[in-house]
Image (cartoon, rainbow, N blue to C red; front, top):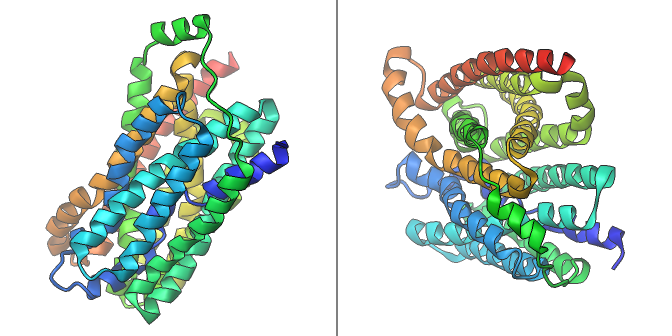
Length: 392
């Protein structure tokens, strides 16, 4: 099978990697149709799949050397399709959350397979280009699907879930373009190296950084729709536009990240944190949807700086034999942070909103802005110190 064809299969699955937030722009609209459900319960439409991703990622990491990647990819896409589409036909929020968990299992598989395929079939600069395009394609897929979901939600909250039908295209591409090669067993020396290698303290620190980051970094995805409704500046369509602009910003940064990182080196991470803090301030202070759009775009740019920075550092913090395990652990920390975000931010913002006079959702963005500013200062000090070491 040609490498060009394999790339098509990889990118087809990559379109689904951010499927957790495909309906994030429609959360407030969906919530209005379940008046007895709290805002946190509605936000579980995003956070429950994130929780399901965590064990899935670990299991796939263990199974990937025993089951062909094509089989795993097809399984992941099918689960994605079932978990995504079935809520269109349901009236029970509880049942919808069950299928969102199934969606999370599918996403967990789809998040692992493109990177694993890229590592298996490509090397050097070509591998880096493929991985860059994986990031770009997942951002592009999310941008388009969120935009469409927001429009469909204005017709009916149920229709917002129709966007998950995009997985049919991914399923066809997985069947046609991903090789069905059997897993190759590691040599005795490779197996020995993997057995001896262990996760380092630095690897655990980077996983912790990812967890702490996403408690605030997820605020955009789970609060933006409610923020727009709270400020009275738009509907589900405008919420979808905001999240789509985030993804467009991420898509653009994904294309230029390599050059950006080569110039900024270790201070890249601090620049990303600063960008997110600025984006949150703009959105919290916004009196029009235009400022929210600007903040969303900046957020997307900055998020696509922070994510690869942390993953690269997590991989570099351990011996090559366990780099995959370190990245997998960091991915788990990411999804755990995404899951707990509303459970931490909602009560925190609720407690402070009374004294600030701002709405709960606006206050959540202010809290997240301060959170990111603190991480910016810490990362800047670390980055400057690391750049000095590299210059010696």
